[in-house]
Image (cartoon, rainbow, N blue to C red; front, side, top):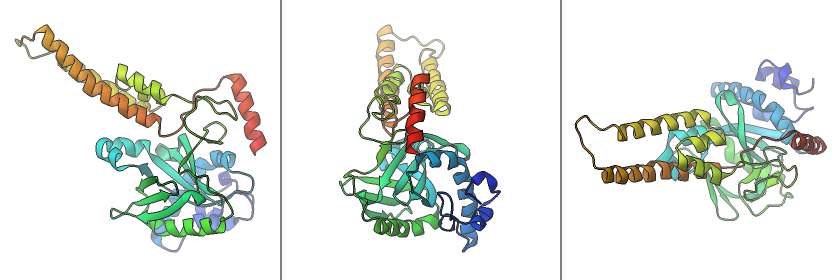
Length: 307
């Protein structure tokens, strides 16, 4: 049986089908050596089923998926100042292929989201678990990435998987970078933050524009980036603050100059901070802009040629 995940009701059926055909090494992805491993395999099957169509477009010729996990790609400052917000925006599926690690943003029910990236194994210098149960990757160029919320079972095998695949693929050269953004249209590697993909001409959203929109009014930048639920909460919160500011207690008289100074302070703190945060979120990866019909046809040709 071919590895069409739509034919399988659960991971047990996938294991029984084997890995001779298709892009998935099921015996490595789904483990049954403990109750914890079996429960985790159920969740991984749901994730893989949700990602199946996308992964088949992303994988290179002959590339196979060796292991799958999930977690949160974050930093200390993001966790400190943004907390749960960055947890939802930074959720990633970690897809360990026979060539690289694919990082794919996802939302509820493991639905793939906008951001896609890769880490070539040769770029990784060191993998270090932290005292809080997380792990940190150090890259050859000196930069670091922190990953949290990975299942405990996977944290135990994470370094083993990387060491095995990195050693097996020692002939794959390092790029000299760290985490590399992928075009969300054609999945080619993209350096920096251009306005469009040089391969397929797919357009990207602008982090600067997102920051400017949030400066105009909090939440507009996140709406532009596609984080609609979070944007609605921001807009409602900002409206409440401004209404409360311009509706002081009954009988309280405030001089116009005091109103002006107060409004400038609120604008600087609320709008300015939100603009900085939104611009940073906009540079977490390449957010796809909508394609016109002619660009969509060109993209289809690129992806078809790639596959």
